[in-house]
Amino acid sequence: MPNFFSNILPKKSGNSYWYVFNSSAESFNKVSELDSYLDLPEVSAIINLKARAFSNMRLIEVGPDGKPKETSEGKALLELLTNPNWFQAGKEFLIQTKTYREIYVNEYLFSQVPFGFKKDRTKSIFTLPPNIVKAEFTDSTPFYLIDKNPKIEYSIKIDDQKYAKLSTDQVIHMNDNRVSMKSATDEDILKGESKLKALSVTLNNMKHAYESRGIVLKYRGANGAWVNKSKDAIGQSFPLNSEDKERLQDANRKYGTLGKQNQTIVTDQDIAWVQAGTNNPMNLGLFEENKEGFNKCLDSFGVPSEMFARVLGATYENQRQAEKGLYVRTIIPEANDWASAVSSEYLPGTKLIADYSHLPVFQEDLKSRADSLNSMVTALSKMLQDGAITIAEYQSEISKYGIIKV
Image 1 (cartoon, rainbow, N blue to C red):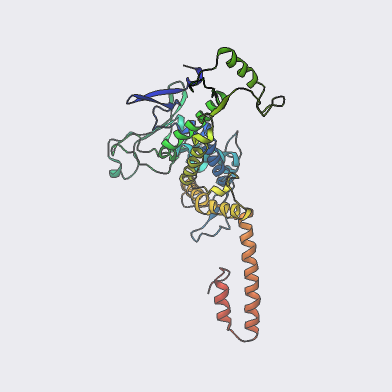
Image 2 (cartoon, rainbow, N blue to C red):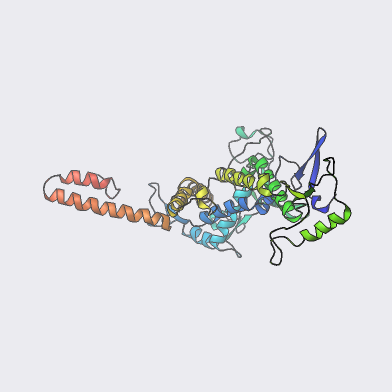
């Protein structure tokens, strides 16, 4: 078997064989989250986009009314998140931890706290690679009967198969969903399920398509065949002899799409060209497979397709609205869940929110709102001056913009 099949495994189905991509996943319906991110540009593009968008947040401490506090109790935490550890600045940290969350769905933040102190005295925060962290529910009591302080063990892989235990008090474990519980005391009950698992078949098909395209491009095989049309005296076809075949092969090498090759074939042989269709990725539907797979990934991760240049017909206005939609429907809710979890762990009673109003896509809305408000105030002021409305009516209309309360 040629070496280009070395990464493809044959599977028998009836009397036929079919081939599957041999990644580190154990079966066709199981994918490696990290392999999918590293191997498929569609997956990495979506996750990287979300991580960059997520990192644009400005964290603001708010009171019970949702308005920014004048006196900050979380100043130390906000400063820490700006420079969380010795090798990462705040933006890099946010991109890293969001990337982990999107790939593995589990996110682990580890706090360096002086011995004997609580999390509010944290000196550094690190985001741990979820693929080398174990989170085990070790309590024999069903999770729904536990009021507080369940038995949980966290550990991290040091080298080979050695794991070092982590203090539960120093770990913040966040995830999106838990759908694969085997029992009420399952040791993996704390772990979420990656979005990529639901995309297993789609991702494998995309890998197949890339693998097939690579094979076609590298080992194209014959584009087709020159077949003899000549017939003998009684009308039967006869094959070309070896000398004629060699002469045709030599002549055919002069033709092609390179600079010194001819594009038009001239021959006195009575032959016809039969085109082969299996060496064209378009005929095999390989590009369509990746396109459809990309769309499924976009839906799963909550990203509008217009955010990517590959979408035909996407205008500036389409992309602007798509960017706004990405933040409003996906990034902001996810970022506020993250900010709420972090603030509740480090500063109970204090709430942080993720603000993105400083971004250009929202500044345009603020300007539009300001222009609208200015027009409204001008009109109301004239109506008040003319006696067409009362001061109470004036205040009632202005209050709709959230400027004053009535």
